Image (tube, rainbow, N blue to C red; front, top):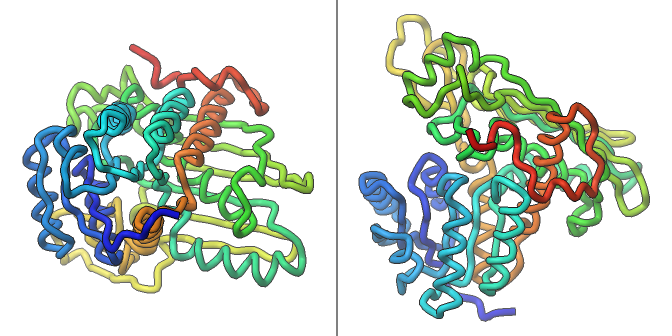
Length: 412
């Protein structure tokens, strides 16, 4: 094992919505300083650096180029949080500078999904390993506080006496993403299936996997997917998107799916059949982002709903104000009875995820989630897209998945 470093100095690639979520969670992480940021917007870079100072997380320098960040003397590890279509290029640049001996970075963490296709994801794995870097895949729902606690209880008390769990259900829904690139299939890699089902399939897989068992203890046998355009292709809402994001988001002529459902058949080491049911949508109008998880076994069940909060507030019609997200992510209303998540970064898993990554990188240990897990997730997602396109179940292994591109992500 490598020598433990006293503190980890992290550089962020990206300064948008998800970068600020990660930054806020770092307040609950020890032994870390955020020392650098690069993104394409100078204004956003500076806003991010100011937030680092406000949170007391270090002296963050802004960098005008990616190379400047990756060759900085005060950065040990980077968090790749830029848009999906940029991540492979970021990894190529890091690989180049590392193999040339110009970068001192020794670890990298990448936000979900790892890539837009299996081929891209496999190249991400090749580059990170060829450069000799420790690597982590940032799947926050695996580290959600209810997932950590629920899985521990189920496997310790119920599965140990009556048998392993056999069915996991995971759903994530909200009213749509913040940034225009999410809505563009070629840039994002798909629609809601790519954007959000990456969460659902991996947290479900994690819940079904025995504690401390390797990922390959569960084998994917087959997948079946369905996609649909339920809301945002309707003329009124397609025009609304165009008004909000500009002509590049054209859901009258170039939509991505806003609903997706998938079933994944798996097999454990003993040949037992296991199932994952996942559903995601950008067409849910409720209090805000809703995550719903279930784990079922022979004599037990576990469930979690992120909007069934202990804290709620009520505001009458007399309370007016601009719509915001001060109560829960993707908040849709400012009046009525509303759930409040007191610590979104903690409940959603960002705090424990980043604590885990920082400690693994500091100590030279392999994280629970690596780029290999990110690759496996992309394989499942592409299988679901292929299944939806062909109208049939896709059985694994499927060689055609290697270079498969979802319909909505293909060139215009």
